[in-house]
Length: 461
Image (cartoon, rainbow, N blue to C red; front, side):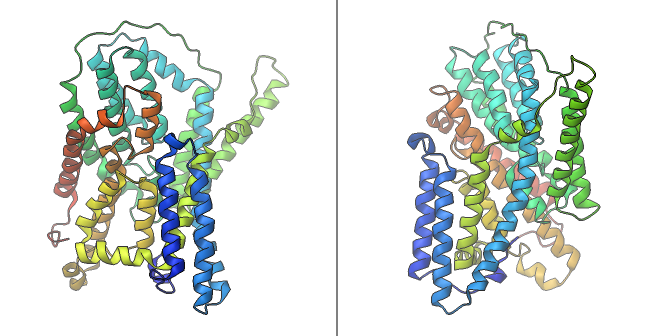
C-alpha cells in the first residue's frame, strides 16, 4: 500500500490541491445520487481520477519536481488497483458461474416454498445473509435474501421493511470477519495489517452487531403466516463441481498468501485456471457424449460487475492523488495523533454510514497510521506494540464493515435493496430503526474490546 511517508510535499493550500479536493467532493456527490440521476457510479469517479492526477502533476511541476516522480507514484497506486481488480474478477466470475447453474435461484425457491411464518423467514434470511456473505459479497447476499423477503411478504410492508433492514445488517456484519466478505476486509488482508486467522476474532463482535438489532426488531414482526408458494427450480449440471472449485480457489489464495508469501490475487488467478480447465474438459467430453453441456468461461467473465470494478479504479486513483497532494497526512495527524486510534477508528465507522466504506478504508490504509498509543510505543516492547496494532486494525475493519448499516445508503447492500423493495424498504423505514442498529454497532465495539484489547496499555488508546 502507498504510505504517507512517500508524499513529497504539502499542496493542500495550493490552487491545484483545492481544485482536486473539490473535484473529488463533486464526483462523490454524483455517486451518492446514482439512483436519482441514473448515472452509473463509475463514470464520475473515473473522470475525477483523471482530473485529480492532472492537477497533481501540475502542482509538482510548479514546485520544480521532476515529472518522473509523479509517473512513479501513479504506477505505485495503479498496482494497488491491479491486485484488487484481479482478485475480484475471479471471485465475481465464480459467483456468475454459480448463479448460471441456478444455485441461488434454487435456494430462493426452497425458502419461498417452505411455508415458514413471517418470524421464521425473518430469522432464516438474516442467518443465511450472515453465513453466506463471508464467502460471497454482501451485495449478492443481500439481493438473494431480499428476493426471498419480497416474495414471501407480498402485501405486508411492515414485514418486508424490517426484514430488509435485518438482511442489510446481517450481510454487512457477516462480511466484516472474513477477508473475502467485503472489499474493506480484502484491502486490509492483502496489505498485511491483520493475519488471515486473526480476522476470525471479529466473528463474535460481528454476530453481536447483527443479533442486537435483529432481536429488537423481531418483536415488531407480524405473527401471521404467509401463503406457501410452490416454485420448482432445477439445478444445472456441474453446479456442485463449480462450488467446489470456488472453495478450492479461496483455499489456494489463502495458502499462496500465508505459506508462499505471494499476493492473494495470484492464488485467485490460479483458481480461474481451474475453472478454465474444467470448461475445456467439458468440451472434450462433449465430443464423445451428446448429453454433456458445454459452457463458455468468458461468458461468466463478461457478466462480472464491471461498473463496480471501474468504480474501485476511480476511487483508488482519486484517493491516491489526494494522498500525493498531502490531504491524507493532515487527516492522519488529526484523527490518529490528536484524537487517538480508538476514537478515530470508531469515527471511521460513522463516516462509512454516509460514504462508501471502500474509499474510507483505502484512505486509512494510505494514511498507514501508528495505531499503538504513545505510552505503549515508549515501552519499546515489540510484542505489546504489535498487539495494539492488530487490535486497532481489527477495530477499524469491524467499524468500517458494519458502520454502513447505520443508514440505508451506507452500504451497497442497503442501496440495492431499496431498489429491489421499492416503496417497502426506504431510507425513512431504516431511519426509524437506526437506534437499534446503533446499539448493535456500540455492542460490537464493546465486545471486541472485552475479548481482544491488549491486557496492558489499552486504556487511552
